[in-house]
Length: 81
Image (tube, rainbow, N blue to C red; front, side):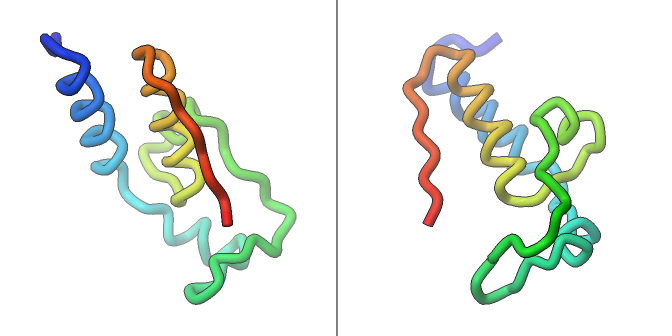
């Protein structure tokens, strides 16, 4: 178990970063490399699905990390531009 809040945050960040990127979904969904614009009807997976599948795209992994950090008591904000 992590001793401090910084350790908990570091472990959560490391865990999510080690989840492989789902390139197959990225290409199926119609993401573009330059704009990263979602143009398909395939919705993002829930955080538990990302953990179960062991892979995810950037938005899904960001949501998972936000959920983990929120559960640890951190203030969390996701920005999309």
